[in-house]
Image (tube, rainbow, N blue to C red):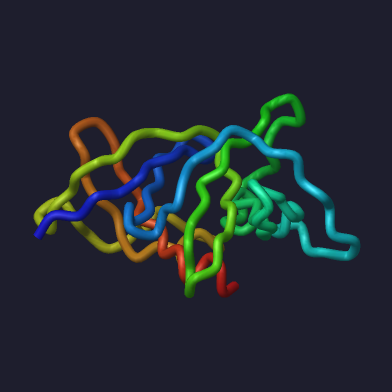
Length: 139
């Protein structure tokens, strides 16, 4: 069985989310900070009148903070009918993968990121880490 994943990078690693969960991908948008919100919540975004939360994926996955001069890209996903923006370093492409390329998360992956992955796909030149969007948003 084949799957399609929208890919993006964080700290040099390639991640993917199921194409059916993705509403759209965007360049950085202005965010309104939420007082006393945890580091994982980057604020609120008003996208064409639709207000949504923005999750800083680097913080959620336990990665170092993004350089201040680098504007994040957004992957807008739908979870339980609600739009949520995920802040990522850069957007990749849509990749077709199949079950033969799938394996559990690598043992070398430690920390918070491990609990948000459902597995990895071996691509020709690199590993594609498959992110469980529902777990990321629920955390």
